[in-house]
Amino acid sequence: MANNKQEISFWKMVISLALVTLISSATLGVVYEVTKEPIAAAKLAKQIRAISQVVPSYDNQPVDDMFKIAVDDQKEDSLEVFPAKKDGETVGWAIKSYSPKGYSGMIWVMVGLNTDFEIFNTYVLEHKETPGLGSKMTEPEFNNQFQEVDPSVFNLKVEKDGGDIDALTGATITSRAFGDALQRAFNSAEMNIKTHEPAQ
Amino acid sequence: MNQLSNFKKGFFKENAVFVQLLGMCPTLGVTSTAINGLGMGLATTFVLLMSSLVVSVVKEYIPAKVRIPSYIVIIASFVTVVDLVMAGYLPALHEQLGLFIPLIVVNCLVLGRAESYASRQSIVSSVVDGLGMGLGFTMALVMLGMLRELLGSFSLFGFKLVEGDGILMFVLAPGAFIALGLLTALINHLRKRFNPASK
Image 1 (spheres, one colour):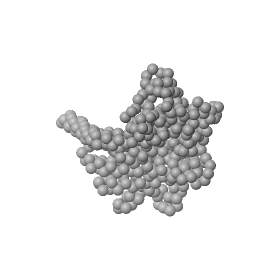
Image 2: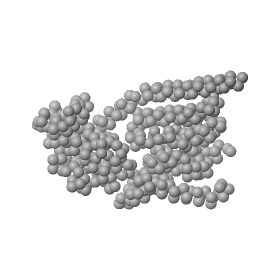
Image 3: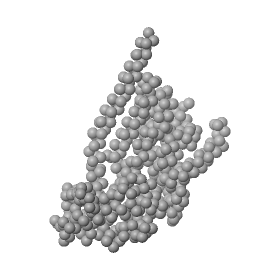
């Protein structure tokens, strides 16, 4: 009798747990399907917003014209480049660059170059830096120093390392990584775009 | 206990942060600014409200031995729903809080209320309890965020009050502990003074 009772409670547990997980996963599946498109649209909108801020005004669809270039001298093409064109002529490139040297994880920065290979503007796409410290790299006080600078003259290192970047207070590592991401975009573009596609 | 005092207990008498010292991970982690505290508090309140509702509805059908895994699955589902909906429809807010949303799953305040309250009380009481506890948690996070933002960067809700860099330590983790300690002492002092009956 006792054995029978134990068996019943065992099956009750199995069935109720299975039901709970089944209902939960069904709910999540529905929510995922419903939110899939808005999430993709939000991501795309963010990318377009970033591109529009870092290159001179354009009239093409840089996202549709996206091509990939190699990082520095590596073989594989992995940096996404969004060319901006006006009346058919290239006016700049938005390069989705990154740095693995952040204080906590990867930093993704959209770096805009004009046809003179100067940095036009920058836009931080993603980061996991300390809120209130490293996260200040998204603010204009820090960001504006990279507008219209020529990386072949402007040393993309923090002042502490002998460079020209005015680092964030308490976030030297973040500032260093930001410079690293810009340098990566510039080097890759110089190596892969300048040689293949001479500036007009 | 009537529903009003059931609701109010989450703010002072049984405040999750200052009295029960529950949910310390998000409390210390996200409160470097007042806005972050507010966002995290409201997201937690939503999850707490929904999980309290569902747990109190299904409490009779779930065998006692498997209640904890069941509650965790329910809570985790709501957290994921919040995460997805926010990413899709409120991308700007999601950018700010995206890192912290998954942390709600491991907030023992949510599981604690499901286990110690919602699984024993009526649906209405559980919902009121969840809402009160959640808003009390939000209040505590905003207070802590305001204190840290004020001392750490001399600003409040993003507005710079005094020029200068502030006391850096309060933005970082050690400052979180110190600020929490000071606020907890203050709240408990006030609690004793105005309500000697509560211990």
